[in-house]
Structure formats: structure tokens, C-alpha cells
Image 1: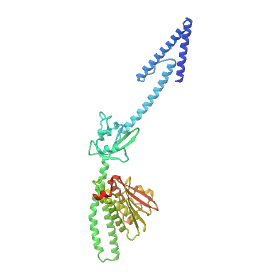
Image 2 (image 1 turned 135 degrees about the horizontal axis):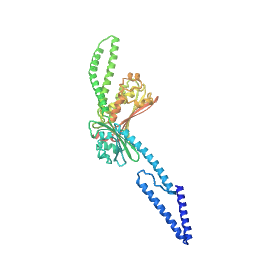
Image 3 (image 1 turned 135 degrees about the vertical axis):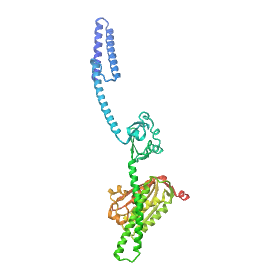
Image 4 (image 1 turned 120 degrees about the vertical axis):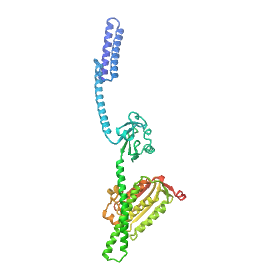
Length: 435
């Protein structure tokens, strides 16, 4: 461009000089200079008009022929146009491949602009969400997906956890919605059909529940006969064998009970209603049960309870969850250890924790502790009489109450298991007493 400006300046000087000389020969130097400048101006206007016409055609035609500076400018613009066209074709190819690949996905993918309007979606979104390319493009998302639960999920702006809802066009399909923010306020919505997974999970839950129910009756019969036999005078070897059978039958009964409870908890994600709970009384009862379990082991219990606040929820479920944490602490804390039960409330909500000064847990085990039947030490867990379902029950109870479990443990120093409840589940003691 610097060369072009230099060439234009030279052409201007040449025409002005030629006009000035020609005018001087006829005794009118200024007239000749003006004529030279006029001719130069007309040439520039013509060249500019030709450039403007070519740019407005946008048909990919070759630039007009021109000499001098304008010829150089046309050639440079033609090269820029070719490079731009090549980049555009490359980007179009990328977009086309993206659209082809996303169209092949079974998941619905929807791009939503910063104004919450539909910008683009794949074919699966037509099938799962009922979007129509002919009429819905550019429309507000909330006009098409009107379920109040989805509207609340979309507007809250925190999408760490997915949302599960029936499809708006087919209630037999269960969808999992996940939203991701990108760009300047844009969002990517992914809706996945999880109907088959939920049916498989329901089948598993039904099998566990039915099998547990069927096991209850024979176990009750076996235990009844064992207790009858053990009440008789029997040879020592036979009595020892029957005693071990009774111990294992009790353990199986505990396992069946926990499986039935877990199946019931998994049947719904939220508690049906909530009631005020005298949390201090509940914790003291669990403390007494823990002391009874620890009889003869010299455990020292410490209670630290915030006396001003209670909790809302289902008392039986929370009793089961809290008891599991306390009983685990008793089972896995060495003799003469200290176990601390705390109930405290702060701006983040209510927190019930169970701490011990036992052997602690290695960090690699912490993420899997709430899995069903996960055991750190198989022999130690079996000897303690645990079923391997306690922490899974705790996790599901807390999920149903909108709470969560955190685990802090240091090998050789002890562990702390804390149940965190949201502020709306905490109430002053006087409200609970009034209820």
C-alpha cells in the first residue's frame, strides 16, 4: 500500500508537470496545470468507480484491468480476496464437519445465545425436545421448554449437577439435561436419553428388594431354630458351631435390613415432606446406643451441641444415617479411643460430625467409601460385623435431604465424617418446640 501511494503521487506530479509545461508553451501555464490536475482527477474517479463496481459484485470475478498504481492495488486486493475466500471455505468445511458429526449423535445438542434464544441444534433435538427448524430458530428457549423445573434449573446459572426430566414430546423418555456456559453469555445444552439406564437401575433395585424380602423369612426360621437349639444342653463342639451359625445369621439379617432400607431410599430422590426434629435429643439417643455398642472397650464420648438450632427432615432416615456414622466410629476406633459428636450451625447451614482418633483412612480410599460393599480391609470389616452398606445409606439419606457428606481423614490420626445441611433445613429451637 505504501508503494501504491508513492505511485499515485508520482502520477499526480507527472500530469501536473506535463500540464504546466504544455500551458507554458501556449502562454497559459496555470490553465495547463489545472487541465493536468483535472485529467488526473478524472482518471482516479474512473478507477475508483471500477473498483467499487467490482467489490459490489461479490461474484468472485477477476478484478478489472488497470495500469500503474491502480493496477497494483487491484492485484493486491485480488490476492487478499483469494486468501479470504480460502479461509472462508476452510471454516465452512469445519462447520460442515461439526454439523455432520453432531447430527449423527444420539444426544440432543442446542446452542443458546446470550439472549436465551435458540441459535442452532442437531437432528436429535427435533426428536427428543420437539424443536422445529422451520419455525423455532431464534425463539426464546423458555417458550419451548416450559417445565418449571427446567426453567428454575436454567435460570439459576449453576450447572454442576445435571437435571433429569421426562421429554417434553414423549413422556416415556427420560432425559438428562446438562448445560455449559461458553463465549459471551452463550450456553450449550445437551439432552441425553437415559431411559434405558433408568430401567436397568430400576430392575436392579427391584431385584435387590425382592431378593431381600425373600431372604427374610428363611433367615427368621433359621434364627428361631438356632435359638431353640442353643437353649438346650448340647456338646461343646456342637454348641460352638451353632453359636457361629447364629452370629452369621444375625449378620445376614442386618445385611437384608440394610438392603431393604437402601432400596427404599433409592426409590425417590427427595423426601416427601419434612418435620421439625429435636436434633439434640436424637443425637443423645444415638450417643447412648454408641456407648452400649462400645461396652468394655473403654471409649470416651464427647458431645458438642449447638443448643440454639434444630433440623428439618425425616427423623427415622436421619437416625439411621447418624447411627451408621457413630457405630462405624465405635467399630473402627481402637480401645480407649475418643469419639466426638458435634452439631453446629453457621452461615453455611447445619453440620453434624463424628470424629475419632483411630487409625485413619488412606486418601486413595476416600472417594469410594460411599460405594456399596466397598471395604478398605475385608477381614477387619467382616470381624466388626458391618454390612458394607452403612455409608451408602448415609449418602442416600443426605441426598434426599438436599445435604452432602464430607470426609476428612489422616492415617494414624483419625477421621471426621460431616453431614452438611443447607440453611433452609435449619430452624431455631423455639420453632421446633412450638411445632
